Length: 115
Image (cartoon, rainbow, N blue to C red):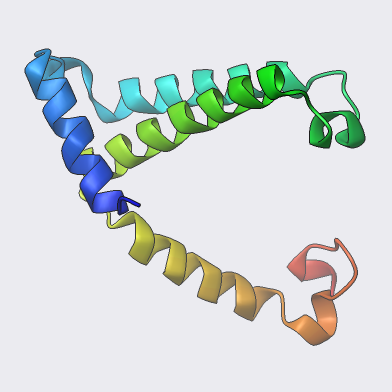
């Protein structure tokens, strides 16, 4: 299994080989990421959670492809912005743990300011 750093290096090489560095700006990558999230949304639109969870292999392949596109654009964007994505996730998870302590957040979907 590759690490995020290894994926970022591979994506950078992929872009360099195609002379796409010019196009991989923060704005363009953010817009591309948003577009891929939209494509993922299209796959689940009008379906129940049960239908999505019981999707056939064709739909699962499509879902996997869109999730991969999202992950790759996110990894590329973090690399361009010089953000350690795993560190940022760890910091955000810790921040969320403080905002949503188990004793107050367990079993409900309230926002932290509603506790």
